[in-house]
Image 1 (spheres, rainbow, N blue to C red):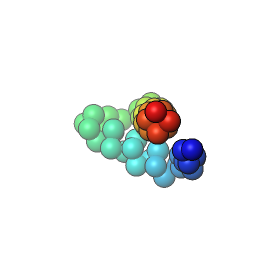
Image 2 (tube, helix red, strand yellow; image 1 turned 45 degrees about the vertical axis):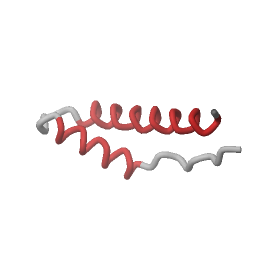
Image 3 (cartoon, rainbow, N blue to C red; image 1 turned 180 degrees about the vertical axis):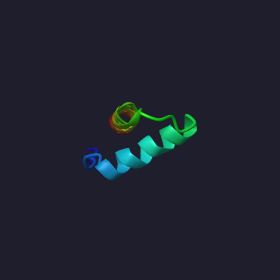
Length: 55
């Protein structure tokens, strides 16, 4: 049985959002958009890992 992962933390999202912001040439005023993209990406990666573990 696959072990459940802990919830995604704000620190993880913040780090990913910062990475995305830097990769996109540090645009102003898109804080929320990068936060949402980061959170969605982390959730998608986690779901993919969980599906892989079940297979």
